[in-house]
Image: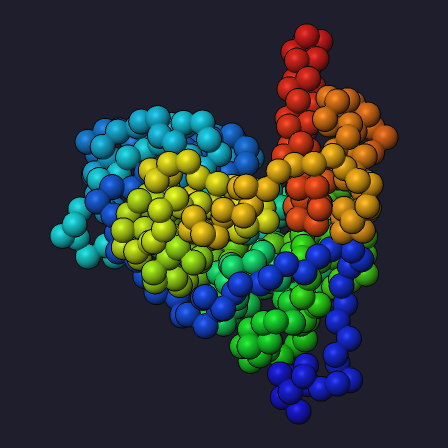
Length: 460
């Protein structure tokens, strides 16, 4: 019996999962079967020096300098930071304040792309990864500029340096991609399976882990079959399909479904012997590390009713949204642009915002798609408990929302565990009163962080 036939057999219909969660409309039909295609290079690339968690990258080039594709243009600004590489051969035009998806303008390198160049990657050097030590692998991962490509954009090399008292025994590769509309990771698993397996082995070596599990939802069984065909014969890496449910891709939910282990509140996966990586990040390492190359492009799902040619595209980092929309066509009068998915992504206020390393999707909704949501009023909480039943972290979003409305943020953090919320949006999705709970929680967290910084500064 083949791997796919086995998965479809009634005896294997039970799928591991987590408690609570929701089932929003998937809307993946726009792009799920669209192979990855390459977008052209824009005339100019906009490269934020801060497009990852941690300290911004530090510029090492100057205006007027010519660079080749793949050449480092900024170095890491510390341990929790990564370098930046030129996504195209061209000339450094300068550094300007430009809008970003986060809102405020930030320093960005403007790279003028040479239109007549072949745009081959010229900056690389082959090396034997099998002979590298774990420390050398960790440094090489940082040098590549890799961050979490699933959206968090946390520097990947930091995950390869867990606390000394945390022994990682299992690597989890997250291919669930539970966000509606997005199919980036799905296509990567199908089309880049070999790189994905190689990247998994590199992470296992760096962490000293003996086992790895690639987890994906059971609406992607073609990806399971593609991966099973590339698995090593020693059985060290396995593929497991879990139940399709949102937010199955959250690392705590994935760890519970794949291993039965619960990551304690306030702890990292390494505290229970796990390390979790996104499939796109893992495939990048499998491709880049043997050639000492940096992250210069990524696969992005560009989709939605407002896009004329939806699909999965290989996009140079720094490509402005305006250029992408002009290439693929868009429709509708008032457009709602979201970087990421509809549940956890953020709306974009400017078409000059560029694609960054953490951008896995661009969702374009038309006026028709959004008019009902925009016109909905917000009503008082009716204590229906739908948000409590949906919350995957088993919090009380209703009570948190009431405290947030009264600015009682300290109580939210202490008695109601606000910081355990990872802003998945389940509570807002099911709320019949249309209360923007996630937005309330973000404001509360921001206020608490600012208060902590003020107290720290006062104490010093």
